[in-house]
Length: 279
Ligand SMILES: [Zn+2]
Image 1 (cartoon, protein in one colour):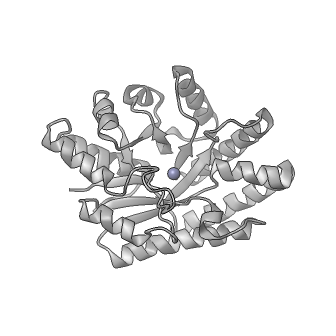
Image 2: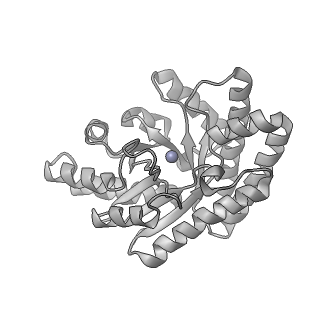
């Protein structure tokens, strides 16, 4: 049975490949390893080449998981909105824009060379910032959506939490204008599966039992993730690497998820979005 974690971070200073092995032992088979911040890989960004160095570390970690375990790992890199905020404060608007657009060219090259499978996290910060910075983050997000549309590759968006319905329709509008909705994923999504279905964007939902029980009421058009951060200084800050398989099997045993649901969530939805075949 294919069991996929759509959003996990592995940190060279954390458990790294050992966290992936935990996922495997719990029944996981496929995972998407998402880039965190350059500073997590010991890199202080001054120009786009520094981003590339950080990306290469994640790509290497991903390669190691594929070589040393029975898992299939895919790599996703982007510019996290928190990182955009920091760069903006440090370098100002012009230099940050220039740096980010040059970095997007590097991402495009890495996608074309199949070193990565998609773009992310890109989007808006989840914490309050000035209007000026928020507008800038939106510009970068639009550019990221254009990049994914031009490459026709998946993009994982990081956004503030969606308390009201207006947020979903606002996102739909932005994606319609800049992106390609068949490739857009909202990472850390709330379990409002029906409304995501309506706007045509794929929710990637944090795999707590409570969330998935709620999500499945709206159908099986969603993905599951842990957003595991692999930070040893913050144990328990987010879910552990075993959560996706554990929740899936538990809800299968209690007949809340069917085998068909699992096939759809862990395989079909993933295959369509990323244009890949899982084996
Ligand atoms: Zn994340």
